[in-house]
Image 1 (tube, rainbow, N blue to C red):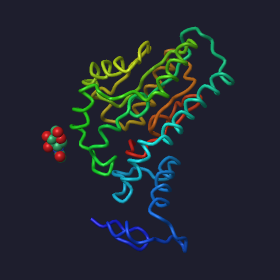
Image 2: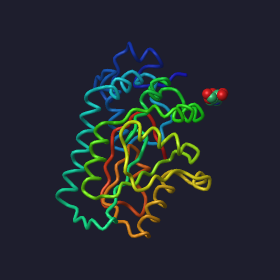
Image 3: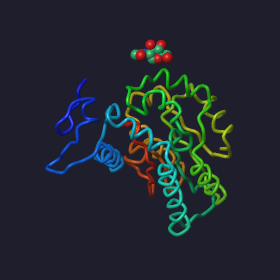
Image 4: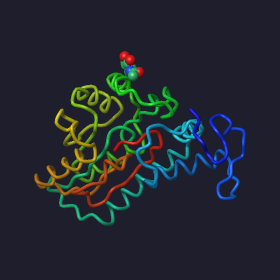
Length: 244
Ligand SMILES: *[C@@H]1O[C@H](CO)[C@@H](O)[C@H](O)[C@H]1NC(C)=O
């Protein structure tokens, strides 16, 4: 199972100080730069978090730093809305949110698979989602309510599948989300294309209905990339998994 990192192999990595081009780096340095490069979208399509970094990633998603990073994202959304959006308030001003790890946290589930260190079993993730017990991400709940109070239509676009609709609504309402304008989930035909294509097609449809999509908040690049794009996109941190 050995993954080579610098000069070491597997669990030995925990013990041996490694070097990169003559630079001595600690395991923490190594894992933090892995995390940073995921967020920068330099590391893509990873299936699992490197085994030697699951502890670091687990700590991060449970840390105050993760909350502060996410809070900052929400704050920047409000700066943008206040200074750069000429809202018409004609029910066509819109904002898109992802659900998982944007409005609701899947950290309690990912904890059971080493924070992404073990390969995802989709069935067990869906079983967990069906229980409707995902906690809210508080910074997103505040942002959601603030945008709504400005007369912006909130549209939720998720790669969750249609059969999870009622569990998803129950979960959202239970933790305080209400008053969204649309909840778009993946139908069978949408499963034939990538998540990025599905989400771009949804934006295209919304725009054809006259919506001005001022912004998107998501934890995955597949939620915000592709055409047509929103006027601005905001990326929340998520080092646990990658959705293409
Ligand atoms: C995935 O999880 C389901 C339900 O928890 C289980 O029945 C199935 O065997 C698992 N699949 C794999 C490949 O581990």
